[in-house]
Amino acid sequence: MQEEKLILDGKKVSGSMKEALEPRIARLAEEGIVPCLATILVGDDPASATYVRMKGNACKRLGIESLRVALPASTTTGELIAEINRLNADPAVHGILLQHPVPHAIDERAAFDAIAIDKDVDGVTTLGYARTAFGTARFPSCTPAAILAILDAYKLPIEGKHAVVIGRSPILGKPVSAMLLNRNATVTTCHSRTENLPDIVRLADIVVAAVGKPSFVQGDWIKEGAVVLDAGYNEGNIGDVDYDACIRRAFAITPVPAGVGPVTIATLLKHTVDAAEFAVSLA
Ligand code: NAP
Image 1 (spheres, rainbow, N blue to C red):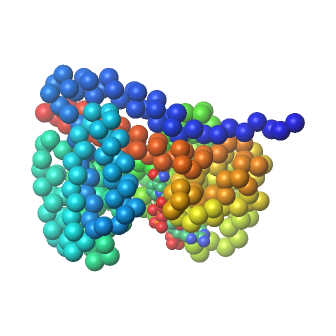
Image 2: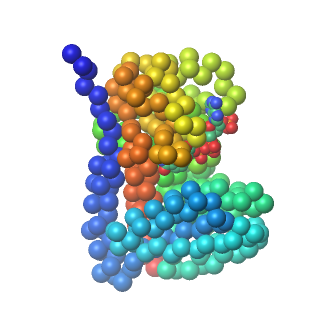
């Protein structure tokens, strides 16, 4: 008999997250507040433009204002920081998202760190990351938070499990490792210099793929009954996991598309509403 597989449905999880935001947005509207997310796109990378457009459209569908700032590829670090400071000072803007990556000539870390902590809805500042590591962040990075939200929505246990994260970027691999550790998983973080990667992944109860390489994680790396979360989003809607091969051994797995991606966007919307409510509480 074929074993039942659990497909972790990101659309379903994001749908209930967005539904829960509706009454909160309505309550803010009664006070004359429309949550507003400012997105900054520097340059003309088509994939980044698509991500920004998707985020903006998701905002509009829910009644969140989306303020799009598009800057030329020739923008300097100083000019970008000046724009961020303008948004920091604007009380109508509740969240700021600087789309990664920015052109090479810009100091991305300096630009991220210019975002005011109360508006850092994607947890990209050094302080936001540090608070994520301490488990005290108001806004942990959206994709890591989405991965945790999927595990929680399906009541998949984290405590005591061995989680192997493949990738150590500051917006994904590192913060998701910290968040899993804070939930009492035993965490191994792997990267491009890791030796014997397949053998390490074979030990995992939970696998998080955050590599940026299409179909990178192979089926025979997956322990029978493991939970596989694929954060990858490569050209052609291809994840970082070889889905057809990995599903044979996994107990539960996220598809691409319709897995981590929609929950990441729902998390961004939630953080923007959280930020708007916080701003009202301070006013
Ligand atoms: P990134 O900054 O390029 O980081 C990739 C990581 O993978 C690095 O830590 C790198 O190691 C590691 N890596 C590369 N080759 C490897 C190999 N052969 N073996 C083991 N590790 C290897 O990428 P990212 O921004 O974290 O994004 C990762 C993926 O998630 C991408 O597909 C991206 O599109 C996707 N993503 C999805 C969402 C979403 O909403 N679903 C959001 C953000 C990103 P080193 O550190 O040693 O270089």
